[in-house]
Length: 80
Image 1 (cartoon, rainbow, N blue to C red):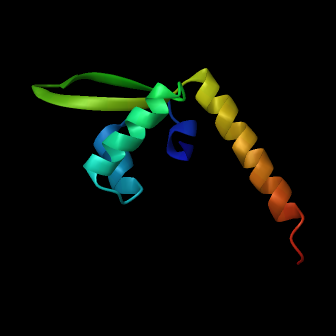
Image 2: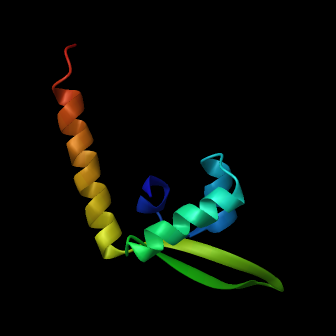
Image 3: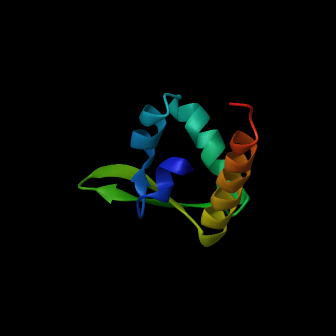
């Protein structure tokens, strides 16, 4: 989800390759996140080739923000 935070949407294969997981695994994760209402999956074409794009929903952005805030709180409490 972090990859989607800085863009309006990202192509499915680009996300899968960037996080170094198979397209099968990415598809399963995208389905879970979409069912949870955290991402939106849009299918279409780029020329004659079918493509899938992913984008964060408002709930996804909110959830990601809460998660990152919690991580920052944990890191801030680590002995340094």
